[in-house]
Image 1 (tube, rainbow, N blue to C red):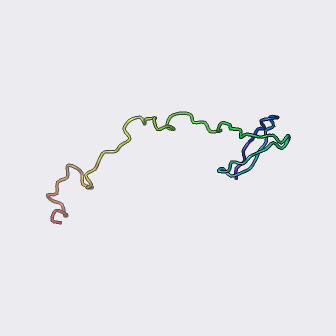
Image 2: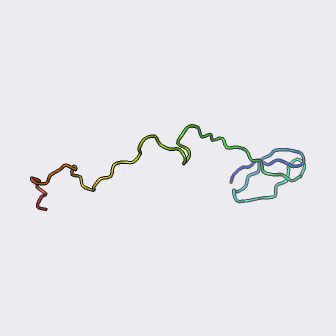
Image 3: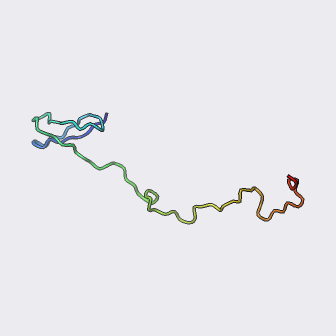
Length: 86
């Protein structure tokens, strides 16, 4: 259950109502009995700086060099290696 703020359209009283997120109950004002509507307020989260949006780019290259799948250095010679005959 979540708590939501509602405002009376007749007298302007603001009050809380607890109900499920998917529920859309008909809410009436506890003070005058008039119809009430949900009050929307901005989130308390503030995103500052870079890195929060998919349009932000990282500085420099973030990819790594491709490997050939072998743990041997590129200039390795197998002439005298024990695994040469494997």
